[in-house]
Image (cartoon, rainbow, N blue to C red; front, side, top):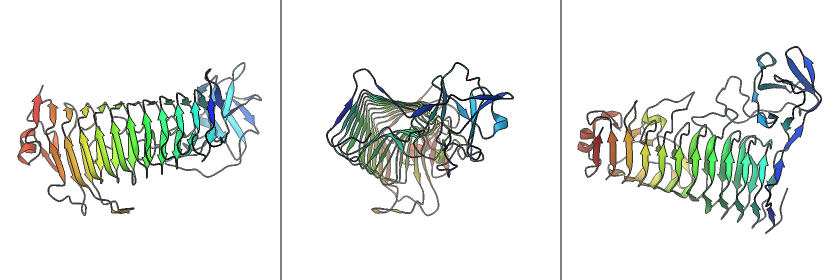
Length: 414
């Protein structure tokens, strides 16, 4: 659908827009079932997968059995119950579960709703099973749109995408179980993302630690993300990356995401305040560990003019990680870690290698006074535990304070 300016697309009965087609002509072949003639010609792969050997995460023709998402495997010999293999060269799909008397659907249509016309309202719909390419959305918002009270689920790549969508309002949606990312925002100024539930995204195996997977990611954009529940996504919970400029992240609950809770990366003019961030960062796989280089509940990476205040950051892989890296140039010049203030947060670190602090690599040294920790409250297992890091040095609470950080903060043990 391509709405015109100021149109409303709405349903009071939760109308379902589906991008899938039924597959009905199955024949048994040994221990599996096969159908032919449904696949497009083979096409190039995109994105980065958690399994970068099989590298199948971006293949778009996803299967559903009685509405249940099936797991794609990389070869016919790997097919078993609950899985399928798509052989594009032979135009054949192999299914490991008996389809007799059951509904088998394949995602086929790329996009449900997309338009660059302004002022559109989309309300009360269910959007599911669309076969969007990696980094593309099933529902794509334009400028001044209001997208409210929809359920966007089980789409191949990004559930809901803002593209050149200045002043869009994304409110009270359920965005869950999408193949790559729940919500994306690209080149969209002053967009508000408020009171949504964004959960269980990256069902199809995109790279967890450091590619565009998980809850929400924004690039070259600005606006407010507030009052959302961002939970159990296989990736970063909320990620502002590459020239975001003017981002308020406020009052969200960010819980149990596999990578960082919040990552603010090579961007500027950000405020991260009054969020509750718990249980993040314990599900990363390849290319990641548990040090401050790998992130934490909040991760500020090579960004400037960032305030982190009044957050509750407890039980994450790390507390608050500040990273200074050599990242090249952006639209305002060199990306640098400058003018970062971390104040009035409650940070709990009682297990594993959990730490709070800063790291830098060669060529990305941080001048004195550019990074301030003040008035934070720390809950520690022991005061003698080295729960703080300062440019490679591991410090106790006493050493952290002696280095000039949180001199008026509090450190509680037990």
